[in-house]
Length: 120
Image (cartoon, rainbow, N blue to C red; front, side, top):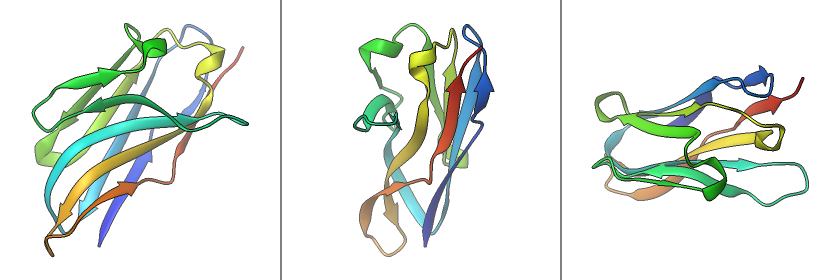
């Protein structure tokens, strides 16, 4: 069984920072790319940032220069450092991992989401 669990969300003032963490656990053989997505009320889920197991990154234009994605392969964990937060960054943030289990099945696993609210 594979699980993906996010943490680190909360309420922050505009201009502030938050660091999200996402840990994958269970019967894992390998993790390919991992990513952060977000979904605001009334909007579609969108990709925020992604990182390959080799460390290559990809960002949405709206967060470039403000957010940084990183990962610790040994800990099966991905992070999202969010700086200079804006009210429009308010959303439920989801983690996603492309994971191979010990049963040699490969699937994309989603976490339950962590809420980020940017407001004064």
